Amino acid sequence: MKVVDIATSIAINTLPMLALVLLAMLAERRKPVERPALAAARLNLPYLLVYGSSGPLTSMALGSLTVAAVNMAGGGWISLRADGWRLLPSFLAYLLVLDLLEYLFHRAQHRFAWLWAMHSLHHSDPAMNASTVVRHFWLEPALKALTIYLLAGLLFATPGVILGMYAVLGFYHIVPHMNLRLGFGRGWWLLNSPQFHRIHHSALPQHYNCNFASLFPAFDLLFRTHHVPQPGEFPPTGLDQAPTTLWQAFSWPFRYRQPADEASAPAPSSNPAVRNTSK
Ligand SMILES: [Zn+2]
Ligand SMILES: [Zn+2]
Image 1 (cartoon, rainbow, N blue to C red):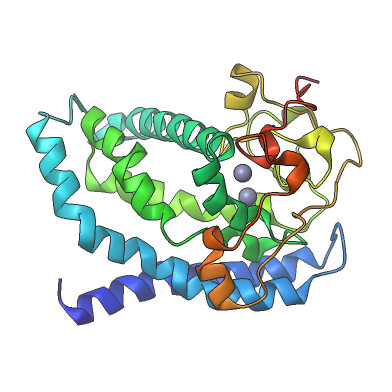
Image 2 (cartoon, protein in one colour):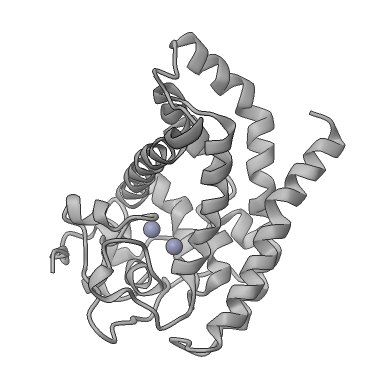
């Protein structure tokens, strides 16, 4: 891949996200849960360039390797069709399977200490808002490429149009991170909402280890990890530690120290003391 192609990929990966996050931050002002934490956004928005670069650089570094692995395994076992009426059911099947894989990957991030060391960067935002969506450790795209996306490549031969639709739908992840008093009431299980995901980011022990869903909370319901949002339930978010500079965010897993009282657990949110999530 040429340098100019990499620069174009990075721009495509960052500029639309930046524009949509800024729009969402404006929308948050209509009904915020808490006062906008501009200090957090001041870190998240420049960090967008780091995280937005990691996807194209991962593709460059691992793309041919993962394609070769899929081909060697005779992958693409299920051929998804995108012609005519078949496009919608094929897309829904791809979406559901990928969302299940995202759910399982997220469970692992809270279960295993070395994954939590990276994922805790996302949870460290002291005041969750739309810009939190890009606050993921820069190595995560590579880890997903080697695990869940590799598995998806083995399972499905996927037409480009379906991959494109899935990528566009990815912008929806901004919404559940918004600092917005918005839940979906009785339809909480249909689609991730700012209220449902705020509970996942909650700083309160009674909310640990629940609401892992990426798009569809029905997976939390299925695996009994759901906490049904109650009316007016919008808890504070964050950890006891947070980066304040880009370098600290970049090197976060080497800096984050799990609190002493949780040191025996694989990850802070795996503390067995508070695990009744099925209410
Ligand atoms: Zn999480
Ligand atoms: Zn989140």
